[in-house]
Length: 453
Image (cartoon, rainbow, N blue to C red; front, side):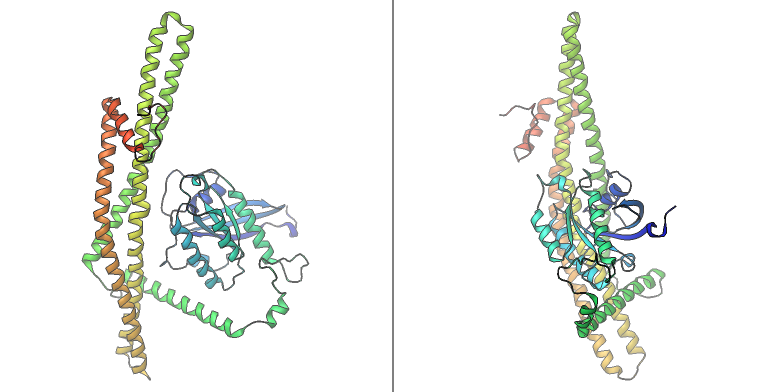
């Protein structure tokens, strides 16, 4: 039984970041000890884990949030009673790094304190030798500018995952110490003690911050209310059927590309395992031929056949991995970029409709100083209408360019993978080798069993 001073401490932690940076992978690796093989879009997941740190028992309540975009409303679950934040970016994704700077601003605005316990995490260091675009120094410099901790990790390889939560717990405990404690150490160097700090408070600045938070909260409420009433059919919304049909079509196409990527990865895993098994099968007959002189010729012939079969499987896997890389780029970058603008357009449409209905209510219910209020509301409504229309034009341009480029790129990739599959299943080793050569002529490394020209 725990004594009062050794009771289990509950700490609430939120992971935030751009989509596809590995927030869920980090959470599952820490909480359940495994790395998910497939990617599923996170809405919002809650996890709990009992954990011991520095001799103390903790119950960690971890919120794995949905990927944040520029337009995203700050999650309500992260607005109250969160003890610390983990801001995650991927070292191979510049956009995700830029996005955590926006998320940081939202966190500070919502919490109202730049000293909120926080750690910046650069994930996917297993890709550092092939795909890194954010240097370690760049990530550390950003974290330092916020007086936040910094760690690079790989959820896939289980590199430094526990250290993320250890370091954040340290930050949380330091922030929760009372000012009277002799052990108190601030995350911000040179932070004054409470009495001194209060005497130096700029109350005008504080009032401005409170007003900013108030406006943000009211805006969030109005947008959420608008969406709810639309869903219930109790309020009208601005509709552009042709535009919305194109946007919905792209969302469905995006999901289907995701299914292709997932199925291709699974096929590649099976193919890789099969190639390894075929090579072991070949080696086993070769080893047998060493001791069985009377069967030597037959064993060697079988070993050679299986060696060639294994090499063909490896060749197809190389072609398949190249195909997967191209499909992932289209799925997680090319289409996702246009979807991001679509979601921004949807958010702008909601804001426009909020102001449109506010204007209509003012016009239909005259009050004192109605003319002035109507004028202000009309101006705000027009501003949001123009913002919404501009986003729509941006989407239309992106949709057109996306369709042209997507069809051209995917058509080329399908021709290549079709040729490789046809060669493999017809047993045409030379044609399959030709497919591989075509790939590494563009920079893909050839397998060791294909000789240089």
